[in-house]
Length: 436
Image (tube, rainbow, N blue to C red; front, side, top):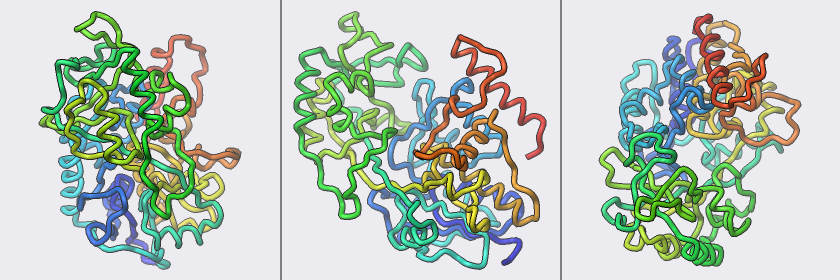
């Protein structure tokens, strides 16, 4: 095994972060990405780090779980967050990006790195003579999936994910919409709100639950749906008011045309910097395309909506990581092989990127003959890495950033905001005292 080289499979968020961490330590990296020679069912762009679901990277505020994770990632020099800062679009308290600019910035950063060789071809066998990071994503090719399945045995699992539709800005009927961020957080025009009164909502609900879904691909015949990205029609089937406690919740909003809170409300978020496209927040779906047009146009604000992209549903895969991976994201039975991204058992864009950071950082340390870094559970990165490797977790499901997995404070603080801010500060104070 060459001590100064490594292979990274997959050019998504996790793969590019892993490659950049290795490069920073002077390791020569071969990064394999099968696009554009081959695309997964959900990917369309030739660029690296393509965002296929939402364009939001969640909250920026450090006193939130998502914000703390990003603050920790910045300490490692996250290439994804550097790109996000350049591709940012208004989204209230969230960090949302123009997808094309975001991916292009990351592609440029990788292609210009002298320590990284980007190879555009599909990998169907796991290299046997080097340190390897498998970051092929939840939509890896069938050939590689078969190899990973052999490597991991029956611990290779799958679930479903879904993407939301996108509409053009000028096709939104603003006479039946209003601009406001929930609880007036962020700019007033960060979101376009599409309200429904009670009668409109009940009519929409009936049409939605009776709408026709698209046929799944042959490899997507299982019916398990991951809770974190549930199709809106599946949520609606759980009860008439389920959507009003989810993506159609009206809390924190006042319709200026009525002076009252809507009965239900759909928010639209900018999809690009120019504000020419908006995505339907929380409306991941697997309805047939004509059904999406018919049912979603029942919102008065969307009665003439032009759909740039319809929602799609696709397969995701993840490992039963507690039985397979160590806290540094290496395999317990074969430590030269690492996993990163959603397949490793983290859930979310930034969580996937963060796992790539840790896998790449630790793989570099292994190559250089150093011990891997074990971040404590007072940090978000440490809590996530220890959760996915905790053998006491018997019914494993992917985990996103959450304060619930971080070690609690020694003192009891009732106020949630204050408690979260102190948890975040404790984490950042820890990083001040270590050398990365």
